[in-house]
Image (cartoon, rainbow, N blue to C red):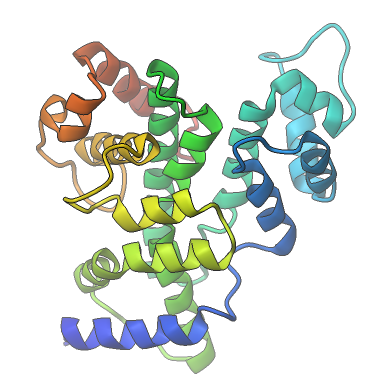
Length: 280
């Protein structure tokens, strides 16, 4: 039997020892994301960085030539694709493409949890992005999308570290899922804050990772408020690591502050529940 308190203490030791050596993103994808999360990304730099990643650049050009976006003539370069799609859409595509690849593990238990975590992160990203479009609080859609996507990155880091420790020690360490999820719940906010600062993401993203569960939070930080509301929506739908929560979304403090209507929530919920391929 694994003792929860002992496991949390051991896990914290693992995290401290691996924080500076375990890369979550490869160098090119990290630089792409660091540029795209800026308030005003440098388009020339974005073009150069995306062009250095053959898989990502090919994906963006293909999407620009898809039925949804194509113009009279096909595009063949990343620059032309970005002009056609717009930076917000390029950011959404890039974030999704880059992050989906890292939510995997050869460990069956960890891989299953990562898949659910990816669904939750992506669901929060889309919900926050849709809220930012509906409401005018000075938050760009790509900012809201990235904030939603990264808010639980502490959980991903915890799983990556645990998988790495299993690999290094060549042990079949089996942790009951309820104990592992409880430990992740306790540690992921502080770990997400540390990780995002370490990889030099904007401070606002680190603060969101740190404060998205806090009762006492900065209500003037509308990006944080949007992510917290997106989190509620996904939890109510059961998109993530837990079963659906029985909560009245319109009575949540964030919903009241954002003046959300039943129609607003219904539109987002329907999108998350019915968009084909969203969580594949």
